[in-house]
Image (cartoon, rainbow, N blue to C red; front, side):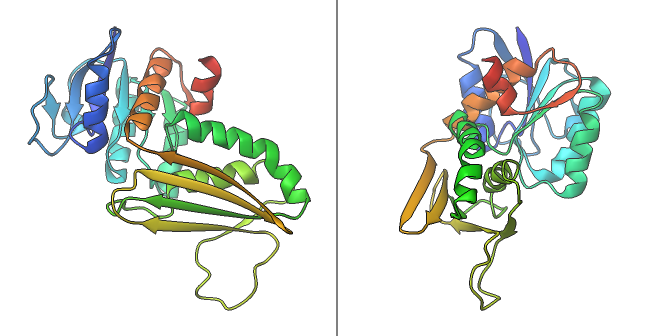
Length: 253
């Protein structure tokens, strides 16, 4: 039985994952962490991870960026692998993620869905060819009106997948309204839309002369992210120190 601590258990994703793990035969949530206590749970809930004294095999994190530093310290101290799903981390936190992965297993992904991670793999294969042919590349992402960070971590991850595959890296451009000039050849535009209850849409546009290729991913519910997080937790439990990705989960699966 894989024992899970759900970090951010009373948030939207925490509730979806809680419901999903209840149906798993080989997993159980043994504790939750959330400062909001207005939800009834079948497991003990602590207001901060530092107060959690329950033994576990893996932590699933869907909380907030401000709670990540304490979570990483706890994970390293207790030697509990962590599936880090929170986005919007700053450079200092990303450095801490890498440092923590030298002590304990950390799986970090900007997006937990199988579809998005497959799209990243596809982008690495086709981007060199289309870049060489002179196609311009743009990314448009759309999310609900409560999302705090923009552009999304997934949009940046898609752009990074492209840049890692091409010979000449692109420069990311987030706002064209401040400069009146035509598009540079090595720009990669990233645009963010916020509205309504959009779960998550991502579109990669390759625009060439007289032809356009569009690759799109649309999430219809948060269940796709929850499913990926649960798969990642199964993968990570028992793993030694290292920095893992959803690509590792897909390859092993």
